[in-house]
Length: 312
Image 1 (cartoon, rainbow, N blue to C red):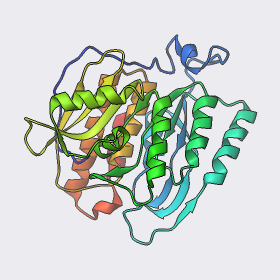
Image 2 (spheres, rainbow, N blue to C red):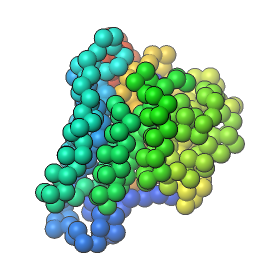
Image 3 (cartoon, rainbow, N blue to C red):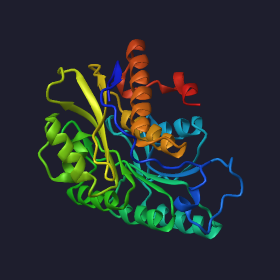
Image 4 (cartoon, rainbow, N blue to C red):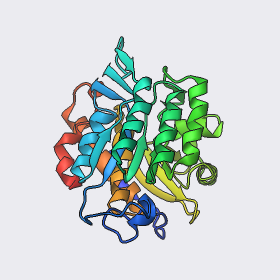
């Protein structure tokens, strides 16, 4: 998401709201038999993502952002990469064999999580492990269906893996696909521009998968060519939520991870879906603007570190 200015263009009645770690009803989300001993306890998120050593994305983005929002991140790496996939000849170590033993160990320890948050998967078998986490812990289920961008799937994503990502979407409380990934989930042809009626239809169809859906990086007919938006909908309200921003003509990796992480943190802190979308759009666009003004190699990612304090 490349941005310079964000505005909330549609004011709606708040829909989906996760009650948050300090709310009285948290037991209904994390399980009635798992009482919170301390109402001020730090929320925990199991983050099932890859770890790229260079280039800001995935866990190197997720951990500092959620930590700055007062949330403990328990990383469950799906793969370790020397650098993200935008660099040639990167080295990738698949960790499929690690995921289920990790889940089993957490179960033996009697751990509980306030959210399970999945992202990039390096093999279709990892879907089974993600489902173990989703079914094994009564928590907020966030799926960022990382599959592609700019109308094409990533080179590591097979058709089988893309199809299996739909299984995760169906058990999620909220999904955060970009426009390319939304088209893949819906078996639609990719187009960078949607009419408002088509955007609403896509959100409604995706809400048949997940209770709540956000699509990032959408151009709505009637907007200027450089005006993009992040749109969302909750099944229970069926109302379009929209936050507009002006695109910057540079592509940075990891912006989707930034957006989904701030959404997850906002929901855990008690925000409704509308506020979570606006918060995430604002933080992502400011991070991108700072990076663009600084210059440098876009593949290095977004310089979000400079404004992490604002998330506190």
